[in-house]
Image (cartoon, rainbow, N blue to C red):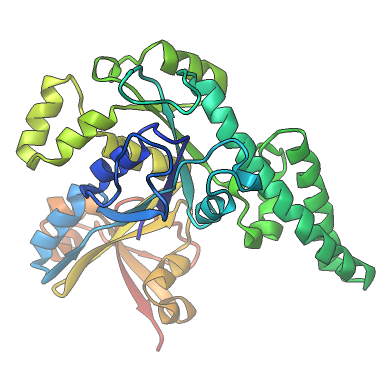
Length: 362
């Protein structure tokens, strides 16, 4: 498993259309009216990475298991969602379960597709969504604070620390700022991760533009980028829908005809890995070749624990070859002969593309 993303935005910004295209499914009804999505649609996609297939071929593996990620099409939020407007908190609870948020804003004009506010204003649209997420976290923390204060009165030191952090976040949220913008947020996270705050989750901003704006954007996407002062991904949900129906070869030709180097899916995956600080390592043998997703700077025992807890608890050492060397040498035997195989201990930070073999005590 790679990571999970929830696609959020106002109704009719193209969430379901994008979801269908990214996951190559038609399960999310894309309709021209608000709240056509009720329950979150879920789709799993394969992370495009040629290395795993090359490793599998060299190892003559019986199974090839690439990394995957999950997309959730969260129903459209509206102003007042945190207080139950639209379908309210039911939608917001779904967002708490994902690793990252894809915030989709509409940056195209089309009189045939209604806009809930009757005007195209991505800045205002995004602020509506952000406000509802902030209010949802604020309401939840205020309820949690009541219980925490009871523990503080009983002398619970851990509860005292949590209470201080909760008060800090409540104050910050009350000023209209998301929790992720707090300066000492890394320290706070370790205490409050269990509460799954929405506004702590990283956000990937995606602008849904018309076909003519897919490369350079337009006035809407430009103003939005200036406002949020962050990277944006330009995507045309309609183009992605067309790509989803084509073979790999046809996709390449189609993208080239549009002057694009990659699909929107690839852009989102790359941005997601960067945003969440993720890398991929591999295991490869006769039984299977598999891609594993971990955070950067993960130490070898923890990476081994992704496979099985016994690998971590009984860790002795790791034998590793870069995937580039593994592929160039056509496997472990030649790589070992050429001194490309390394023996690493408990303090080794696994690198992207490492092909790992773990030795451990049962």
